[in-house]
Image 1 (cartoon, rainbow, N blue to C red):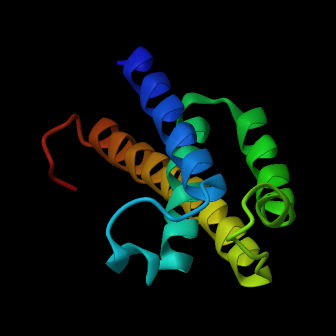
Image 2: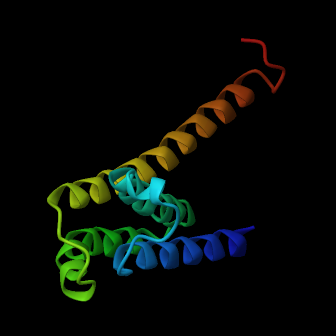
Length: 124
């Protein structure tokens, strides 16, 4: 299972890089209208997977990438223009990804504690 999550993380990072640095945004035109959501999801998914795997350093690298990706886009992809709101969406995506994993962990811990307190019978 862990290997599968690492593979999913690798795929999500490749999709992120292609999406950020290609000359045009890949996919149907309707997706280009969702630019900020694409940025949010493009950072939330790898952040969540990395955090879940315990690879916190990858989240740190993703923060740095969020901060430099917009200037790099303007330099590497002539059709792309830097946008501060894209950086905000990237950073928000990182927070959402990590936040969801932490929320799920806490919920699982609470559920396990409740199951342990009542012997797993579901009665309080």
